[in-house]
Image (cartoon, rainbow, N blue to C red; front, side):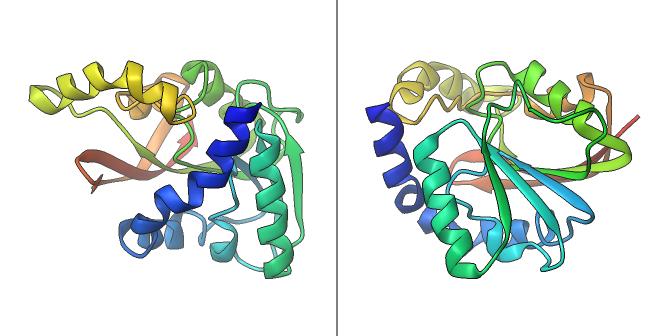
Length: 200
């Protein structure tokens, strides 16, 4: 629990240097084009809140109570009505087909069970709904991918369980999603992907 507190306290500081560049641009369309009843999985400190359209019905989950407290303060500062719930991505407390859009940004690197978490996203999406995401992923082949593999065990211990080497796009496709849009970017030395997917 103490680690959760410190991770929450340092998260915005650690990611802030990227927010003025690639992450802000990607949040504008990943969160900014969400529609209908929206679920954000792994809301963290609420970094996406400024980008959502005003009229959304927005619900957000995170397993870290300290992250949720920071997200609540950010929502209050912005005057946003957000339903915040403590829950893990692998066990979303919602009925099948509850949401028009699910958003996740920099989340699936740190979930305990990647395939189960993505399957839960698909379950709570209505038919025809959209899954919108930004995730850093493992480099395919070459030295960089091997370096990510080697660094991940130590990195997980200091970065809230974050895996540097997750193959998240493949997990999304395994869960029965069709990729509608996928963009390749970079975050420092790591490949970064942003995309939109729909249930098949």
